[in-house]
Image 1 (cartoon, one colour):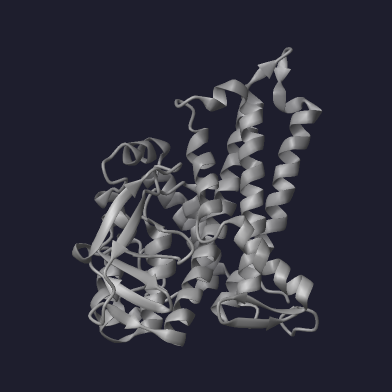
Image 2 (tube, rainbow, N blue to C red):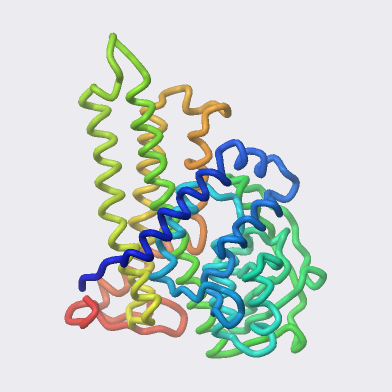
Length: 357
């Protein structure tokens, strides 16, 4: 299949890059890392002014009403800026889940999310840890095939160590009951699986952005650092490392865009495409991080260098919404079995011959 982004989508991406360059500087990221909650209400309010928390919220509730294909370029930019805010959790995962859920939870929460007045997070069901749980106003947590909507007073949240200070983690415990249950059985499972795919897709998009910034930072340093009377960027070995990282990134980018199309269109092989995208994007980000560190040498390990802002983001994204082993297993089941269960309750045919291929 072939598709391209229209002028409005690319213009919105460019505008967001300029906005984040001004509002989410490395100095601001560092200050948010050092804060108690790892969150800046002021920055969150500025993000709300440009509509980011409500990017997936329908216009009727005050949001932008974009689907995953319309928003994937925006999440590339938040990854590129190492944005230390719960935008993926709230805008890419929780808001669409509430839209699908409908009813009282949607009516109660979608408007505040779009206005930047509420932060919502979703448990992925794969890990006992939930990102940004400590600052959430709404927690959507699975219990088997059931889904529960909980406010903070109903959840016990215990902070846990995290490699990325911009994504604080907490273990959560709650007492499930009819009062908090919003979906059960097949419907609860379908909502959870869709949330997992959206979270993995947005994480893959952020990984592209982080990889792009790491390569940019490394290339700039290679032009400045001199050895043997010339910039190290003139050395063939350095050129090859940076070129290899760039090639890996550009191979991953269309896979992420393809997955965004599949999620937005509810394609039959949505989960397969998402897993392929996350694997490729996180591999690209991991290679970009290693390459950037090698180009910088020992100084790259220091706290004073900004390099670790994007390195930590690259590492944390690999662990978000299913680690590589999980997504590799989903892809492998389809490839090796020809038709296989690749997620709870889903059976997909082999990709060959699909009209979406």
